[in-house]
Length: 71
Image (cartoon, rainbow, N blue to C red):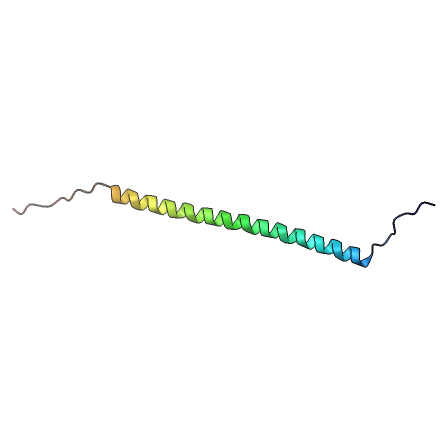
């Protein structure tokens, strides 16, 4: 006699599969949050670099003081 699989899964198996799905979701969420933090950090560093570059350009400008002679 050949036995087929039961139509219903056991409660323990169902809870185990549910727990595994939850772990997978949590891991995926953690990965997404990590990527988001990296993107934000990269964006912040880029803005700081641009700001520093502009400040350095202003400092490097040659400024000549023009004074008026008293007549």
